[in-house]
Image 1 (cartoon, helix red, strand yellow):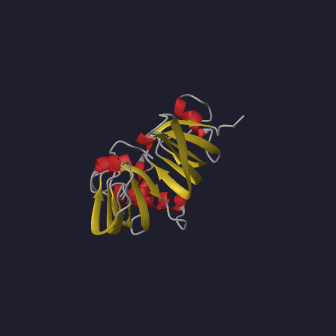
Image 2 (cartoon, chains in turn purple, yellow; image 1 turned 180 degrees about the vertical axis):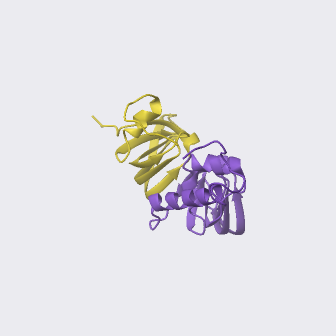
Image 3 (spheres, one colour; image 1 turned 60 degrees about the vertical axis):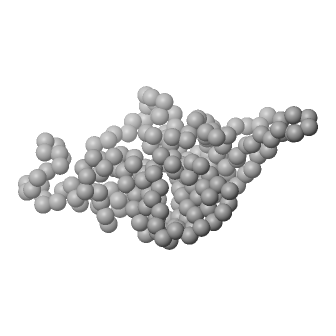
Length: 122
Length: 96
């Protein structure tokens, strides 16, 4: 389970639905873009800004012409929809991503290491 | 820690009331969605289930110059919608 190395990105992801998209890593989905084109491929990464990396992509442009791309990077702003595969359990995927972030946050235990939120008492 | 309240304090809370209900979403570029709201966030990114998307286009007749409204529909079982395309969210419209 890969979590961003950036505290800012972890926090943004934790507080929005982008965290679900991050959980789609490894799955094959279709991303529909703002300009009416679509990219179908395997998700290799999603960052907190919804920028998406796909592999083995079938790209359909606005006019319907299809092409194959080994890798594709889509800027978050250009996304309109992401199809969620039928077999994805949304709640479980989000919880798993949150657990991964919390593992990073609480690494080293309560009294050890550099804490992400030093003054928080749980 | 984030806390959820049961009172309606801000406009986003009205959307919370529609969780698990069917809703109508008007989007930019003459699109509309009807589906079941599974999740949303502060950006209005949403997860909709059993969605019907309607795209409306206007064609101009070359001879009469009248406007012909055409709509295309399609169904998608589960869709993540990026919030910056959302214009409004409402209970499903009843066609009277």
